[in-house]
Amino acid sequence: MGKVNSTQVIGIASGKGGVGKTTVSTNLAVSLASLGKKVMVFDADLGLANAQLALGCRAKYNFSHVLNGEKTLQEIIVTGPMGVQLVPGSSGIQHMASLSIAETAGIIQSFSEIEDTLDYLIVDLAAGLSDTVMTFIGACEHRFIIVKDDPSSIADAYASIKVMIQDYQLDNIFIITNCMDSLEEGHRLYQGVDSVIQRFLGGQVGHLGTIREDEMVLRSIKASKPLLKFSPSSAAARDFEKLAKAVTKLTTETSISGGLQFFLERLTRKDTTHT
Image 1: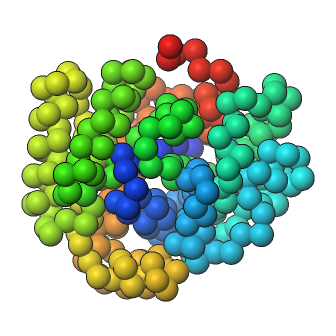
Image 2 (image 1 turned 180 degrees about the vertical axis):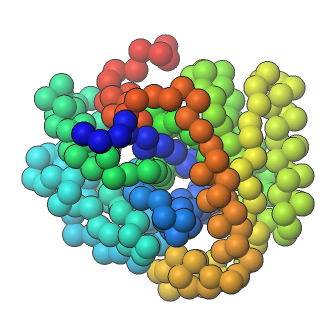
């Protein structure tokens, strides 16, 4: 059995699309892996299999093949740069909450086979506030919201955080400011959002870091390579390295035994916390 599993489960979300959520998810994963961490990305962004493109992987199968019993989890996992593992997503994910007890047990069992070797599971969520997104984010331990300095991105991020705090009583929420002109501008944007949250929601969110605007990010996406591989000395690559170090300092305050199993049980049970 070995150590008590300490897999930390991170949900990465955004109020709206187009703010770089998958870019952050995959580059954070590669940056954590470069620090010697065992990392898996679970692509829960339905319909868009862009995590595999961002990592430069080609997946033959996806999570729907696990849900319908055709494949085991091990058989669909693809390995990307720095050993980052990817679970390719599928539209079947939205049916997770309505699986039978036997199906649920099978999925938890398949994940538990890999959990001893995993430090981080990064769940790349779809944009918006669908029931599926909220089910996933409620099951994660840490919640990262990507925000750009754009009025609609800020408004949608605030709306997402409002639902998390007021409707779902979630905490451990952190903002990552993306595509910023400078680190200072990123911090200023975070402070603005956080002050509104404190004033109107009575909650608080942390700031994990800022990713600067960098043309190398776009070039790396076009090349289907993570930034750390494509342009390791670029400003944004250095920002992702700093972000990864900040993530390693996050602790599991509740010290849940079996973070991954907790995630899956929360994901597949009927939601009783929210009415």
